Amino acid sequence: MLKGNLVELRPVSKDDLKHLFKWANDEEIANLAHGSDSAYQNNNPQEDIEAFYEKNLTAQPLWENGRVFIVYTMSTGVPIGKCSYSNLNPVTRTAEIGLSLGEREYWGRGYGSDIIQTLLKHLFYTLNLERVQLDTWSGNTQALRLYEKTGFQTEGRLRKNEYVDGAYYDTILMGMLRSEFKL
Image (tube, rainbow, N blue to C red; front, side):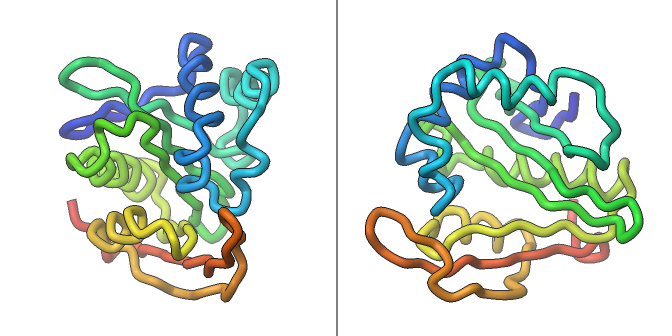
């Protein structure tokens, strides 16, 4: 388990699958987290969600799939979202991250920042990565503010690369080097 100030990141367990199913089938949360790819996230049967996460429930080398964590609050032990790292490259010492707060009452209360800080601390100081990147879509202003606040820099923009709710948006590429990470 990875512990932050407000959150604890735990590996996915079978008990967590009901929360992942609920969050994956919440259209607003799926749109924010996945942009154009939300169409592939919504309306999935529970069996598909379970099959997708089954690979995370068994031990595999780090570089094959990365890891998905369920985010629990430290104070109450309530699951509130998920975060992950993927595409871990042991040669370049890089990875991609993502996060989604599935419980709206925890939005805007510092949990997102703590999730990122906790995950980055693990990636930079335990796994010895040099660079971490992410992407989001330009309509997800909450995420953009969070990523900028936690030290990510915009490194690129793919124009009109996302299609959400009938409109085109840009994909925003962001990154952080270990030397830029501040605890």
